[in-house]
Image (cartoon, rainbow, N blue to C red; front, side, top):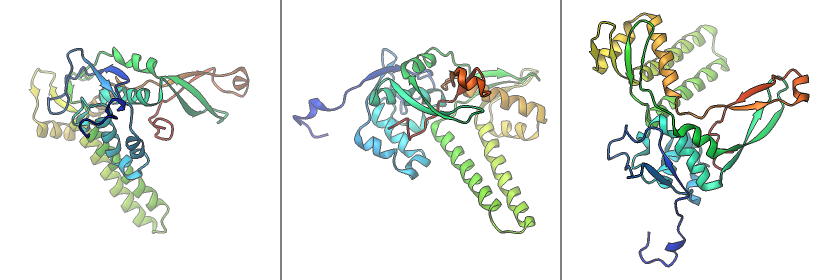
Length: 284
């Protein structure tokens, strides 16, 4: 910024202050700057920020989202290290600061497949996330207690890119004119890579494991060896518990009541619509 600019008093100002569900406890000083009140300011997006969401490559690799968070939430010095617990809260706050407190989302009515739109009250969504008491450990039915390592935006983006690339390869092979034997080989290779990504996600999510007889293990390689060699029931149990813990601070689906006319067509009396961060309607 140019010093002593007479236009300086017209620069954007914080439009909303928020408390993070994580309360900032997972962040070292080089990642996040806390405040005395626990609330952090959120500025509206600039024109440059809005343009970032129109760049497909930047959206795909997560850079656009990181740049916008750094611009609008300056307390996050390294948004790549933001945990999955805080992501939805931060993005909702940026939406409010930039476009106001309501947002229209499009959805498809089940059974009838009719396209409709509903208006959300974003502050109420934020309020639902504000007082979530984050749990970061769980016990499996077989007696293993584990503590989780919150996934950062960087890790989630890396995993999503890998899954997208493998899905694209799978689709390309399916549509190719290759012999079935060659397709089978390539499908198997793609499946193996997807499994490797999922395995990496599982291991990186576990901070420590305590065995049923009270021994605690924190060594990442030993944890990886355990996941690679324990029985399928234990692995499935851990994955189920991890999935439950990961979504603690995510926006819950919106409940929609069907009209009498829709119910006559076989539509359920009520159903849920997921709130997705679709850039076509969330940031513009």
